[in-house]
Amino acid sequence: MSADKSSSWSYAEDLPAEDEVMLRARERSFELGVSAISPGVGAVLTVLAAASKAQTAVEIGTGAGVSGVCLLRGLGPHAVLTTIDVDVEHLRAAREAFAEAGSPANRTRTISGRAGDVLPRLTDGAYDLVFIDADKPGLPGYVEQAIRLLKRAGLLIINDALDKDKVANPAGREPNTVTLRQVGKAIRDDDRLSSAMLPTGDGLLVAVKK
Figure 1 (tube, rainbow, N blue to C red):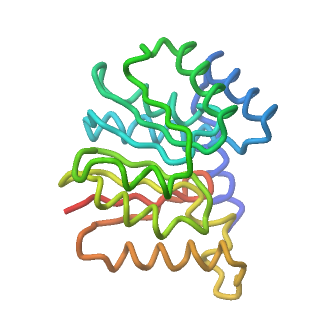
Figure 2: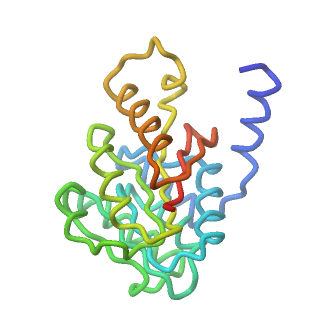
């Protein structure tokens, strides 16, 4: 990356202004040892959620609620976010963040459990948006479940899709890197989807179900 391109990326990442709700959610993330999405990613999530006019959304990997607050701020006033995490402490922190953000309890559904066990129980074609920010070994299965869950024109978003710039390097052969590279190519070649890779944060892979 050239110096100018690197500066532009940093500028774009630092441009969003975050309020006290987001800063406290980030503090909880740090305390729990959770890697929260960047401000740039958060801003894109809010915009995509708003532009999609989603009424039903699923988040795979709740963290401490940073990404959930960003999604809720883009979703309509009657939209519902279902968020899944295996760690009950993460879910508790997220519920606190959602409450501080002024989101009514009936707008969120927090589910404790492994995504691989929870997702098959959700209804086919019932969701407008699926955001995945979870363990990389499970990603191929999560993606397939997400495609099943999405309505036509539904939006799939995958965080950390460039794996700290290692996906673009053919020499990068770490297991997570290989998985992300394979998932990216599979989504690109999937006739059910139209996709794009955004360099925001550590990479956002975005796809629309045809």
